[in-house]
Image 1: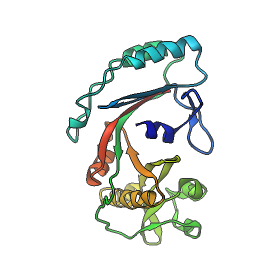
Image 2: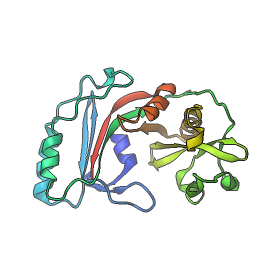
Image 3: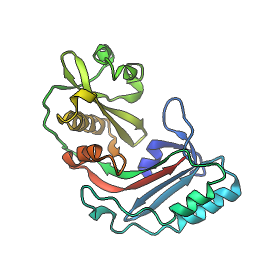
Length: 234
């Protein structure tokens, strides 16, 4: 979970959130909480007023360990963190714009998924494969590498790329063309991406939202290991 936080965000020397770990450095959320059975990891944004940062820190530090988190069924979700109502109340003067909460997985070595189509790692010369809805990826190919794509008819129909990349881990971003969903292409691309990431000496991480059952299904087909839950408040 510490690796995930350091992969998703830029942290300062006080372990406070500075920005999202992307080239444009978008603003970080005001609060990040990662819960695991071994303990919790939390960060607040660097520019919060000291009194507010201290109040949030007190609430986050008191959050109990999520003992039963790893025993969840494939469609279950845990009870919300006990501190969440207090966090919402503390941030109420500037209303929360977005609240995100979901499972965090590690894709294990050797993860595989049946590939109905060829899956290739995209290089600069392959930008022509990135027709809509993936044309945006052509301009960000170096930043998102490694990028793996399931290809049909001379175009990418599903992709998996580094949504964030750190010194020791990378976070998966997975997209499938709407008309190609339900073919298992996302799982095949994610399995190939995980192997490519491990080949670069990084751990392949995968996170999603609790209510995104399709994305959780990808994790299940990969045999991904649930290691915790993350929560962010913007």
